[in-house]
Amino acid sequence: MALTLRSSTSFLSPVDPASKLLRAEDAPPCCVAAPAPAHAAAPSRRLRLLRAGAAATPSAPWTERAPEEAELLHGSAPPQQHGRPGGGVPVYVMLPLDTVGPGGQLGRARAVAASLMALRGAGVEGVMVDVWWGVVERDGPGRYDWEAYAELVRMVERAGLRLQAVMSFHQCGGNVGDSCNIPLPSWVLEEMSNNPDIVYTDRSGRRNPEYISLGCDNLPVLKGRTPIQVYADYMRSFRDRFKDYLGNVIAEIQVGMGPCGELRYPSYPEANGTWRFPGIGEFQCYDKYMRASLQAAAVEAGHEEWGRGGPHDAGEYKQFPEDTGFFRRDGTWSTEYGHFFLSWYSGMLLDHGDRVLAAAESVFLGTGATLSAKVAGIHWHYGTRSHAAELTAGYYNTRHRDGYAPIARMLSRRGAVLNFTCMEMRDEQQPAHAACSPEQLVRQVKAAAAEAGVELAGENALERYDEAAFAQVAATARGAGLAAFTYLRMNKKLFDGDNWRQFVAFVRAMADGGARPALPRCDTGRSDLYVGFLDAAKERKAPEAEGAAAAV
Image 1 (tube, helix red, strand yellow):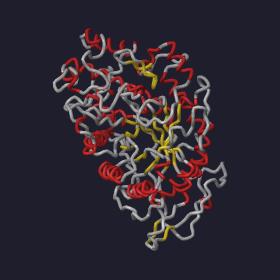
Image 2: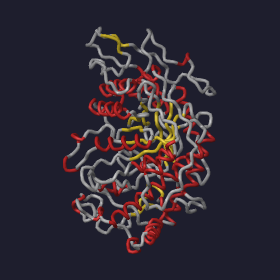
Image 3: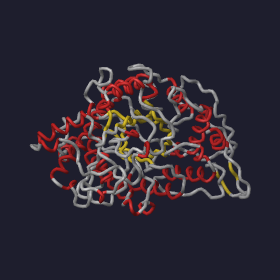
């Protein structure tokens, strides 16, 4: 026999929209006392005020950053707090990519409300949503439509959750997991048509419209404004519209800085079969603005001939390192020219990240919201000397060089959390021919974050619902002191049977600092309110999860 508590929560109970707090009478009723959700048992992580320390003036883009400089800049900063008091890690859940669609409407509102209540019952801290540039500023420069997101923020507040808002300055569509198509604003696409060089370009001249090329960050190529000005204006409008929610309901602002919102180049695009795992990808430095920067850096280095283009022997998207002259074991990457080019290429990305974060810092300073930035977990070919796939993405990380330490130091200077992916992966699960090592990569990034004094948060790279993936994340959380973990992604599968049971157990394990007590396997009814054994033969469904599964 099993006794499972059933909630009669009304998912759409009216709540005073002026209220910024969930009232006691809005809590889901229950017939008997039940354990509080995990996020109520331990206070949520302290909201940190953004630090105001100015970063040092960036050096020439291709010059390596000195660790000593960054350490001095960070030396006087107070130690940052990780996760919840007592070692618990708050869990967030990504909402569907099209929660707010291209037309600016909140889709499936009843399903979202039901799902939020189910997640709250499971003990999650909050949810993450992409705040699409292509949706909000679709009607013209400086014309912002926040209404659907305002409705969502109120919905999150009524559910007693927090929100991670992603400033998504990239297009949706064409990458792993993209289930919808949300392009950049039409007026931006018009500018791209008039001047194709404002987007990233590969060696064969293929243009990628996912994100504006960082080569024109400070040039007025968007109707008289620079991309950095456009991003800053967008974030300022967001701040002004949601000022009453920042620091309480809206706990975090993740600043998009590249494709998929990640600080990287679009070196491995899946659209039209351009790239396939585990290909090395290609350098994205052939628009006229990037080429001009490369030429200037080559002249400054005393080798004008190095500025005529990227490496000629770097191969193509789907190739392996040993198929190329540049990335093979003792290839061109390890020569003086290779060092020059890779330092310039990665330095340009680092400077771009610093510029965008500086704009975000100036906008959100004093609001109480935490800043964060996402770094991609490029784990394939990690076991080779050159780490080719990381190099084409802009991470100058090789067998002999730490490419994540400079990124961590930059984020530390800006008071931003380093959000890293592939936390669920294990080396033994990867194909041998791809020389993958996600576990070693995570350890390296963890060490870089610790050395720089920057908080580390995590995500899973792929949709996973199995116990092994959850256990791997929990084990990483125990050793890394994660500030938060964001689960990819909320959909109907999450609320199905064993998937929901595994997820609820995972949330509780994270709240306990990564210890992983599993719910009984007989509790497959999507409920976290399991009490004891009375009738193991009877299987019922918790109303919150059942309603969410039916509605999503």
